[in-house]
Image (cartoon, rainbow, N blue to C red; front, top):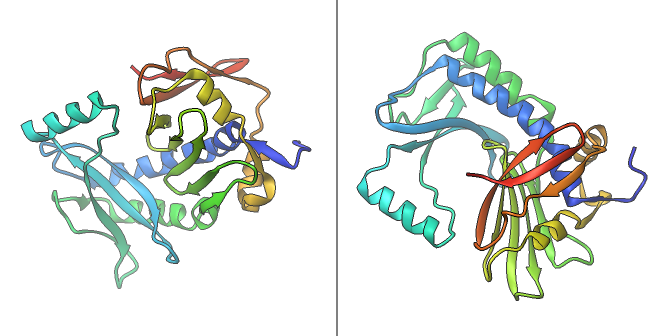
Length: 251
């Protein structure tokens, strides 16, 4: 049990990560009941999204196989240290018969096992995670930063006084990875360590978040690999062993 009245940001991310990974496994299982035209897609996955003041909904996000133009812009963005993303989505909504439909069907998405898909999707959309995992742009007291927790992941951003620029740390559940970036100068390992030690008062978080963090408190050190430098953007893999969690730059 954590008797402090705050968590460190690293504890928030790793404490909620277990539930993100669990729900992502359930989302991945939906693929078993769907047929898609894989000749036209590079990848696709299901995700939970929520528009402001509306109920959470299920989407299928996908990317087309990159042509010459897309590959050029992706390479150009990566050279600039910018995260390049392109894709489309189809909503998965219930029809009048209480069954899920995928619409619009950009790539001939078809639910081939309706009963199984409906059962899995209903379990996801009525879960405690889906009903409670949301928190928008909470300002952090005594820190020039904000924390955003939602179904797709966790994002923290702060103004860095040394570089007079914005730093961000973004956990994306589908990739189970951290994305660390700067809008000013190149990143430094110490900057990431500092962000992970940012205190987040417990009363800023929903009781559901607090419960998960308390349940998943680790007696492990968080180690930042020295490879996080000389760029304005880095994707970090989360590696665990018996006594520590290592954040290492993805290859």
